[in-house]
Amino acid sequence: MRVAIVGAFCTGKTTLVNDLSGAVANSFTVSDECRPILDRLGNVDWSMEEIRSYLIVRQLYVEARGFADGQLIVIDGGIINNLAHDVIHLKHSASRERIIHSLGHTRYDLVLWCDPQGVQLVDDGQRNTNESVRWDLHYEVGATCNRLGYEPRLIQGDRLQRLSTALVEVGKLGDVT
Image (spheres, rainbow, N blue to C red):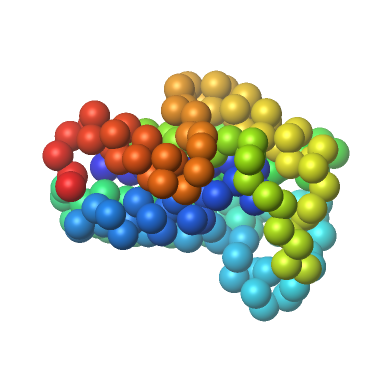
């Protein structure tokens, strides 16, 4: 079962990914692929086409690794977030449909969309801290979900409420706990 946790920056995606993986036995986490770049290089110009392309290919590769049947795979951002970032960061967002199809992306079984409301922006020197951009990206993530045919579940509230909602939604897909 593949669950993507999506949303703008500083909306609690990684926290929810870690909490959900910790709460469900036999789960595996797929990290956001931009984090290793940030850790290594610090501030990055995310509007560079080459970096955007690399992130898409890298995300597809990491998500395509073999996992055991019945395992919950919790994906931090995933292809949805990468495509939404393309729209925000690139002047002329290239269509990624060909590469996504040719590299065999498997659809997510569930998409949980983190609401920025009530989540404080954190300035760690690497992340964007522009509130307006965060909301633009939030809405673009929703639009990207719609374009790809997903009906994301909006995740709201404090950390415990978000985890509780996520566990209920995952539970609706079958026995993974």
